[in-house]
Length: 249
Ligand code: ADP
Ligand code: MG
Image (cartoon, rainbow, N blue to C red):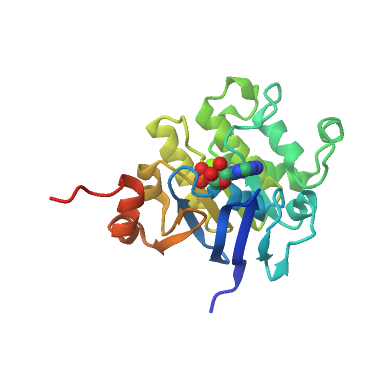
């Protein structure tokens, strides 16, 4: 049996009585790449919020590498190895991709120290490797403000990886990207999946098809079904929540 990086049991999150998550069960194997889909309001963002400690469970628990995350702060959870990529890129626009990655390396959380102290050789190699991985070597020393939206997304994913997390949580990474940029982000996530556990939330079905092995469908705060893309795509319950009831003949 594979080790579980994430185990979520009977998780309910209520906002003033409204259950954004409702008795949700979920688990992720170490090294797995999972895509989570579901209609608007299904609870996808709340699901990530509760893993990262932004929101506390009303009932149930989240275990990361066997450890219950309840009572840990967002910062403690992040330092224990969970990295989250938000929808809009948060890179330093006046700095270059190389500098952005140097700052993100776990060595220092202090931007000024990272900029003005000499960079250790090992870290320089790590950054060079990351630039290759995110395919930005050619633009490594240009100000990040000159990057396209897709390149900024790849840079931010690289910045996340620089912090050496075990679990990457990625919220809608291809919203607003061109087809070509979307495919590049997909290739990047597939490459990262070789050495990380990853949860991706996404709406873009073309993209889900490109990267998905296992798909979890959320609906009304709970897991509606799980399976391969072709299994969930043909599941009548999934078709119904996406398209609504079919007219009776
Ligand atoms: P998704 O990301 O799948 O679109 P969300 O997790 O953002 O869904 O939201 C799930 C449901 O919970 C929605 O109906 C939303 O309005 C509600 N919700 C989310 N956050 C809050 C909050 N802080 N207070 C009240 N209701 C919330
Ligand atoms: Mg959302």
